[in-house]
Length: 182
Image (cartoon, rainbow, N blue to C red; front, side, top):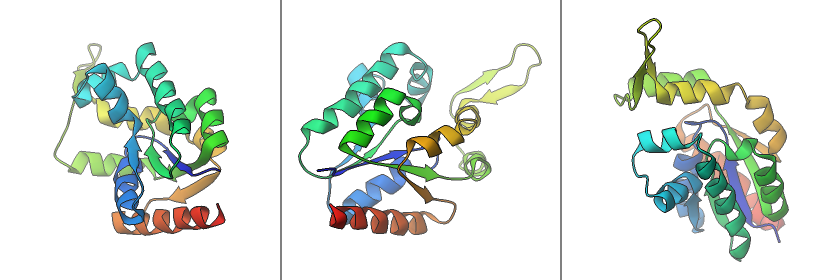
């Protein structure tokens, strides 16, 4: 029985935020693979997570995190790392044990939110021209180039360009329907 609900999408689209709230509402377990992998690797800060997201070990741990959900018998809501929805092995695995939902949010909306939240996070200076690169924003831009791949990887899509409460309502409704259809 497919009773896992995997949320995929670009950084900042709402996978963790919506997932956590919806899991509380539906009273099902919530997991965040980025947090799981970071805890396993002993990397707590966002800077370390970002640096390691391009690390082979980090990617392998994301695959292991996805694979372990087949051992859970109860329904679960899982926010995945941004790279998971782009990894064919993970996409096939998620399709076999659950439903993959692409949380779609306009990249410009995400970037605007990041610029206004007051937390710049990790920044680097471009040595060639001296400009500053805000890594959270750069990650959104990089993954946004792969939007069509997220669409192809997901069984379902949820538009999350409204308020957080609207996104929670939509996702709750969608998952409740999938649970009822069993």
